[in-house]
Length: 466
Ligand code: ARG
Image 1 (cartoon, rainbow, N blue to C red):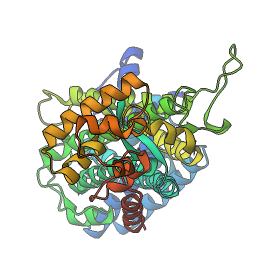
Image 2: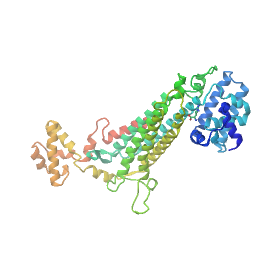
Image 3: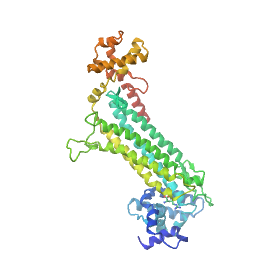
Image 4: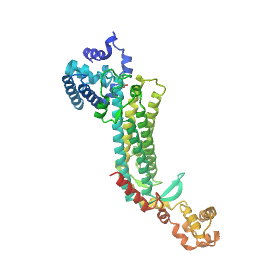
């Protein structure tokens, strides 16, 4: 760092100071290594602010033109990777302003009229989180499309449906995948809700109390794509609930991804053998030559740790902070960036894995018939055909399961006389409902597992995501 730039950084707020910050002070205070990711948002905010200052006559047209020209040059330098970020200039706001001063001279000093770094950073982070929400919603849709395509192609494939991870009732693989499409649809809805609430512009709140300059907050809000300016200047600079809400949505979404990831981890084991992943999403072991490990799924499963951690981290930073701005709030950025980086990567990896997975239909179908999975179908048959109360049918079916267990067969393997011994009304067409295929096909209730239902739900989602 040159003596010059040090003096410059200092000069942005150093009027009443006679000594430079110490090394440790600089280390704890500087945020440029992190908030340089806000450069594009900071420049967009400055452009809008300068345009407003020009339009209201607070600064001259010539100064505004010079500022816009300087900001364009800075944008170019950052894009080209030649912008020198300086730690002694603390943060992205002062780095850009200092460079603007170097480029256009004293007119740069007019940009900060009626503005503070407090409303500036509140704006930058809002813009960043808003974009992150939009990117995430797009990535969610990509994953949903991958799931829907797989579900549609495998709407007829049987698999065991589990509760307690015990065989419960046969379901279809398509139905199982479509369950995640629903979850992800709600996740996208949560991001959209958060976006709607966050879409008010804090710029113009200045340090905390507003400004005596005749600014036009509606103009900057509109320029930056907000619905309106925020209505309380204290709240504008101290609110971070927009980030908390987005992080909460991210944590819930990551929870859903971790559940699917866990299922993939189970399904690819030789013991389950329900699906295969290609080399693209698996790795080998350096000692065990037979291994094909689902690392990508395991890492997606893990991401909820960092993402939920980010929500907890920012919540605790904000808890108990008196109004208005406190420097504590500078520490919101690391977790926010980390959480969205992790979520976007997890969504991309999951979309890739879903597209990549090959279901092993015969293994899944065989597993669907194991564990007396059609017991409910037997009980339902007794109710429907013999008019028994469900509780009595449940009891008889329990006895049938017990007998099948002792004979070492599935329910469809029980001889008719064994079933008739439990209730003389049983006829041979009971066997029609005891296969997993008949069981799944019969569940045509809205949202049920029958292939026709699955195809209908897949079509509904395809239309929705168009
Ligand atoms: N780097 C700061 C942050 O991220 C910007 C706001 C600083 N404001 C101040 N008055 N020190 O929060």
